[in-house]
Length: 173
Image (cartoon, rainbow, N blue to C red):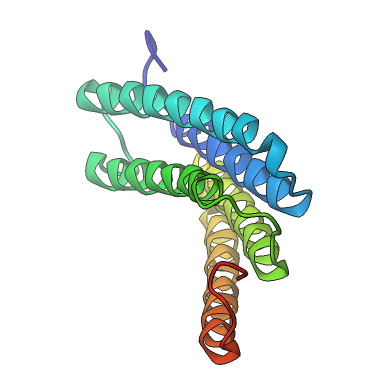
């Protein structure tokens, strides 16, 4: 972004960091090995730092560029939400590491898989948004991401329901 004009494709590149972050989370949980956790946390931390840098460059470019068909505030909100998602993904692995989780449950793996699908749909929507004439396709992709998010919420609620219904030791869970 630095040294060039802002383009909608910059959001796609930024979202690519989100897709990579979600993939690292999913792969880490799917093939869980506590011995490799610190390495994966550092990978996510490095991606988040890259996201911080790219976000700053995009925001600086937004200050000076003329931006039809979207306004600065809308683009800024998109960037902030994607950045928040990347930080949240990093926080998941930091928390898993902090609590010395020994075994990953299937629901956590499934949630991370849904997160990957959602991130990919959002990225595809952003890609098509760069070509504004195909906004119908973008809308479909963003609707797919919303449906995936709803699946994730249902799975999350079911996990919490099971958690409080089992009566097991919280450390085991």
